[in-house]
Length: 130
Image (cartoon, rainbow, N blue to C red; front, top):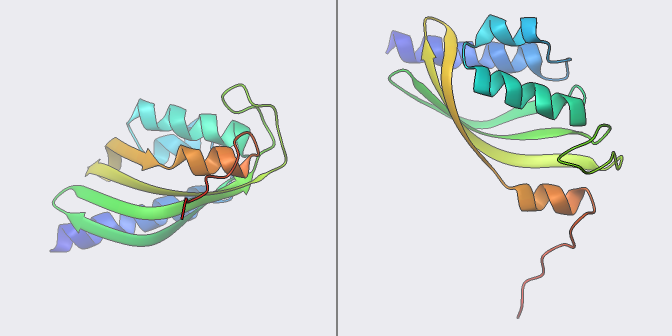
């Protein structure tokens, strides 16, 4: 039980440290050993500088923590070939972290990229047929 609490508190510290900040290599390495996650974070930070993260729900089990949350920011840099639009990102996501020795060693992420493309204005909003 103590380990679950430590892992939850670690993820809270991690989100508080990087949310709204420039996500440098040094900052990322304080919390993770997962190079794939570091590259993902730096890629998004170039397109949405100092994006913020919000936890809506968190579940811990063993050395895993699952977060349902949102990332918000302004599109100020190129994103997958899309020039900056100034559009607001409000992207729901679910991410699973594996934590070992107070470091994230692996992650799995799912985010609704269709919503993001709609928010950036590069794709029309989906309509529901009635």
